[in-house]
Image (tube, rainbow, N blue to C red; front, side, top):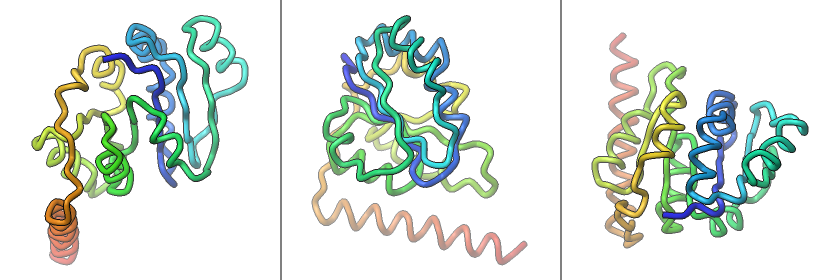
Amino acid sequence: MHLKTVYVTVGTTKFDALIKAVTSEAALEALQSRECRKLILQHGNSEPVPADVSRRISQQYGIQLEQYTFRPNIEDIKASDLIIGHAGAGTCMDILTNGKAGLIVVNDELMDNHQQELATQLASEQYLHYCKPSQLAVQLATLDFASLRAYESASENMLKFVNALDELMANRWSHSANK
């Protein structure tokens, strides 16, 4: 599967490890091998990629880097062949409801990490792939994004998703209250 345009989002969080991982030499080589020509980074509260690094990415890998802190992202989502994002519920739903291939990256530095559970569930249903930041480059090089199932945004599927989130959060609250 060719990935001409890849959109990366950290949402409203700070997730420097994701930005660093996706702009690593190994990840850029993997993107280049999949014919990526444009990499859009929504870096939120993370540090932006310096201008000299952006120029080097363009010159060395032939990948145009566009980045921003925040803006409405629906056009970026629709224009992308792959979305790489933090494993927040909103990002996961954006990927699923827009019919995009997705690689969600779990922030393993968070305490009480609900992202891992959400990522595991969505991957087990073959809707998305997931990894940790340290695994991103290898996953970009090896995953078969065409093998992902299309999400049917019928009301019963949305209800299942909402119920699964409710259950996840209820378990988190009861676990925290028992500590």
